[in-house]
Image (tube, rainbow, N blue to C red; front, side, top):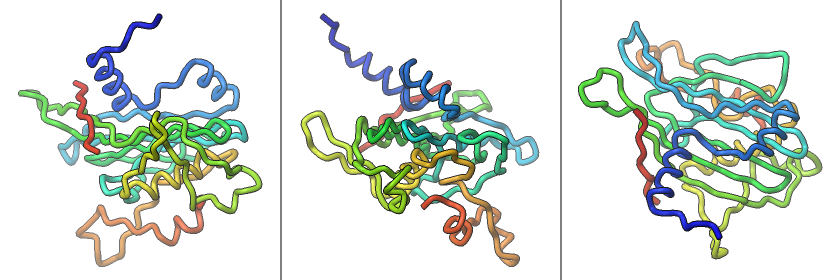
Length: 242
């Protein structure tokens, strides 16, 4: 008989989930390696020496084969597209696609096994760390859906629906769990990403595009035209990591 998990055990499990992302069992990891799918969900703290400030760094990565797919990328706190720092091209597919940096990152990570999906959305910010000049990473879970369902083959005969649908998640009692409105679009795009066979392009991060007369706002981002042609269509739980 399994011992019952304590409140401390659940809190530690949530902290690890928020900080490191979906914890995949060995058999799933082996399947992903065999399929040649590489996904890097980690978030790191980096120092910009010229700007004399710290930022968070994340990598958009992943892809799919027919049986399985996994993907991780990032949006801002309102669920809007972030500009990539650089796009990454490689010989292989289903790997690293782009790198992004920002003061705050919201990670969207999804795993698909056939028609069953896990979705994790986490928020990552920089927080003061006592007297140290280096901040600490503070993470929180915004949404965690397990074993959601979508009875469509978006990687095959239903590919025309990519970019318009995402899985449905339920509680253990059978009640539907509603995604936060701000991240509905990001979840829909990530659903497309975990069904994108031999993925070579970005689904969430986009190029930085600024008008000539708007250089005073270097963070301005307008990716509407390029995204349309290039892309496949409660309270957070606070955790800290020093």
